[in-house]
Amino acid sequence: LGKTMSVSAFGLSAQGEFREADFITRAALITLAGEKAVDRGYVYFTEVPKLPVEDMATIERLWQAYSDGKFGYSVQRQAFISKKVNENFENFFERIGWKNKAGSLLRWLPEAKNDEFIYDAEKAPKGHLPLTSALRGTQLLNGLLTHPAWETEGERSRLRPAHFLSRHPFN
Image (cartoon, rainbow, N blue to C red; front, side, top):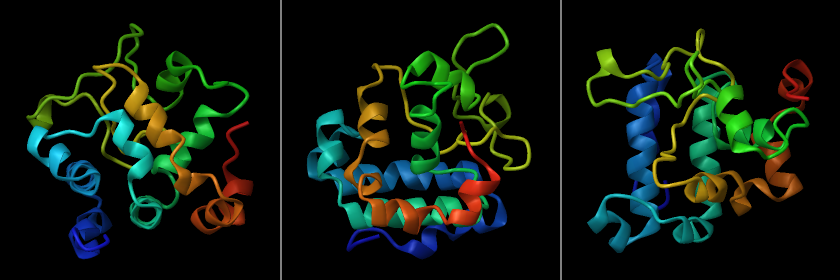
């Protein structure tokens, strides 16, 4: 990814290691956001629009390629702007499987065995990954879902082949 991350590092997800791919994605976003983000260990929502479109598109292509179109930020965006979700975060969290049966947000825990998220592409709902923390609010997630990389028609069609859209519509 750009001059900072190697695309080959993301190859872990080719073997279905989506939890590791999620860690790599988070690290890539922090690196792409710049030195201050690296120092603090996370991305501010105000830094998201400055994340390079080319690098974000690469991250997206990798998620989609290795999940057969099931995971990625543009996949999450499709769910978010769908008629059923209508840009409502509570509906969105439910739609992509980030809520438990009691209606609470799932908990991410450092130990894989206790982590409540689903890292199996066969079992996870469409759009379940990559994860974005909503603990401090939804501004970061909203920034990622509205990133300029998903805004141009050319990018949307390049990231999501037409056969994928026709097989798996959100609306």
